[in-house]
Length: 158
Image (cartoon, rainbow, N blue to C red):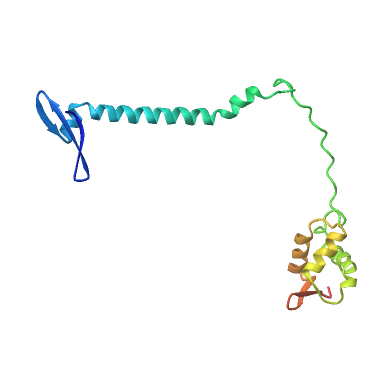
């Protein structure tokens, strides 16, 4: 009888070779077990490599089935490049911080002498001012806006 036998929870490989009963690694060797294990590992590795190649090329395969309205040889026309806009206080608040500070002070007159940053941001968003966070940070750094008390700010006398 050839094949595995269970003994004390372990599997013993027993084989008869030339009328002699062999066990363990000798039985595996006698039945070409090492070659079968290596062949099985090679088959699995090759299958995984082929699968990963197909997955990596899936976008190309799906591209064949998609409907293309434009030919690959057509070159899209370039849109005209707009002329550069001159930076002024109206288009770039950071170009003239003093004018920006005066503009922001007029926007915050209704908030009172001291105001929170959230109120200032809401007033600037309502006025559709570009980049209010960057501008307010620069006003604080350059001394136009200073801390009045806990969480509130006021305009400096610059």
